[in-house]
Image 1 (cartoon, rainbow, N blue to C red):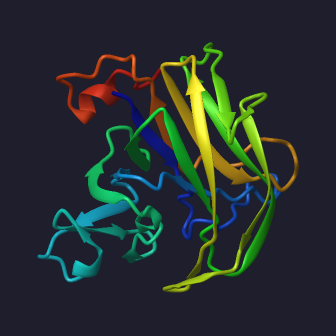
Image 2 (cartoon, helix red, strand yellow; image 1 turned 180 degrees about the vertical axis):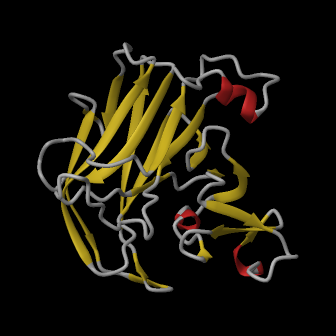
Length: 229
């Protein structure tokens, strides 16, 4: 059995809000990345809260397992997390990151623009990081061997209104990989062409190799095997 802990989404206000580093250069916006299948969302308690029916902000239309995920920073429902169609539950993150969790070492990933206005992003990067860092995995995206741990998507056009003031359009990719214990993934629009996310990672996905022994372990126990690696 293997697990996919999906990338850390963009946590700067609205998901694709840009950031201004000390240099004054506009940073690249992050993209949401998740699977179309069953997913669990681990949330950073510094950003989100899981509300029960006792809260005035609880909304049964957005309730999973008796809880609604609330964005404390933006004072609203965490609509970005609900973009994943197979979302089943929320739990607090052990790592302090925002993570989608799903099963599968051969899987489909969705890159989702999710913006507050119609936007076109060029030169979108799907970036992979193996754990341990010295691993040399083979990664295929839509059957194409990934070079340099980065796959480039020429453009993501976002123009479809999904309500609540947000827009979303998706690109779905098949990902297959071998050769690492864990594989982390993020996606971002590379505005300055330096192939570097100029700001903190937003939401992270982590694929855990099925050869890792997981029987008898809790989610927390499995994840603890790879913390600080």
